Length: 422
Ligand code: NAD
Figure 1: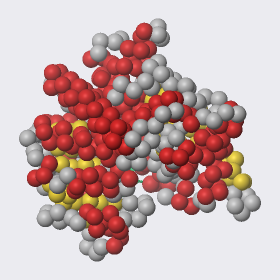
Figure 2: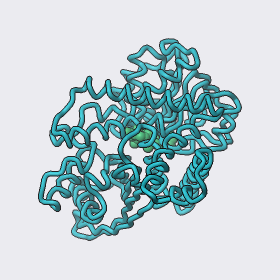
Figure 3: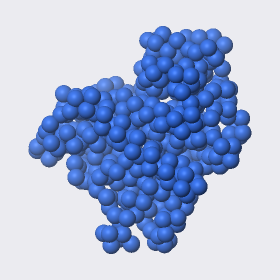
């Protein structure tokens, strides 16, 4: 167990340092000097909190939580709160830096933030989760708020957790504060289309990438790793669009059929944690699935899945990253040399933060949009950002990841410069 934890910790440190390396390259290619990199190489603010929670058996447990605010030159910071036993300080910092890049790419008036609590919500009762959520908000309340730092859901947090957090913040402030947090239930000011926003954004990126590679989506053979929120809605959208989903996977293994899987059947039977392979015998491994022949590969599960060990064996022509950090930098270099088109996570998985921004705008206006309006605005934003990054990549002769970092970090750098911080 201890060994596994050390390996996971190392993998997360790897993500932090490789993120710093790409930020440094982006800052240099934008012509800023090293002080700009010094400013942006890690969060401006990192708060660690210890949260005492009364458990149902009468004992008290102390949980450790974090809130990172990477850079607030453009506007208030924004980013989800993750509840997971493997949360680390390094991971929360890295995720907050990715949020700055995502907000920059989509021209959202935010910098990046992120939060996390080390806990296992699968082993906690609803009442314990509520006390933990409220305790976290009390602990971080001084540094968050609708014009300071706006949380949202992330791994193992959902609209119910957002509702408790919003209620706690509102009672501390003594006024109703729907704009404090996004991803809320619709009745409390949530936005239509928020639940499916990440998958909708990935779908639009796949359409754009397919156009660039002359691939007709109706002819496309697609493999999706992960069958959770992102992977399952994505498989539905692509199946409905006429594509052939030939492989899907979860933590237990992978299903594969070159003739195409029966996605509606699988969607009906998956559980709420995104498990489906436990209902089948003789499943493939995730490693085997990633190397199968297909046109589009979508990692939509966890980080570090495409590495220098398997990058030479990936057969897909297009890789669209729905997960955060699924491809290492070494693997990106190998795939780019092999002329594969990689649509990076900071672009492809940003449908969620974009609709979170729409939710905050609607909260501030007190006026709510229809599902069609949300979908239309999301499509516009994703297409616009995709085109800008593809253009930057083509004109500079660089891969789309570096292009995305140049565009994304460029806004935080420019705002920091105008403010006179550097
Ligand atoms: P989820 O928890 O709903 O589902 C995760 C899926 O991945 C499940 O099917 C699970 O079985 C599978 N999985 C877990 N560990 C695995 C492993 N070791 N190997 C293979 N499969 C594994 O999560 P989600 O919300 O769908 O998020 C998936 C990825 O997308 C994450 O990297 C997340 O950070 C990223 N993402 C999600 C959103 C969102 O709105 N849901 C937004 C941006 C990025």
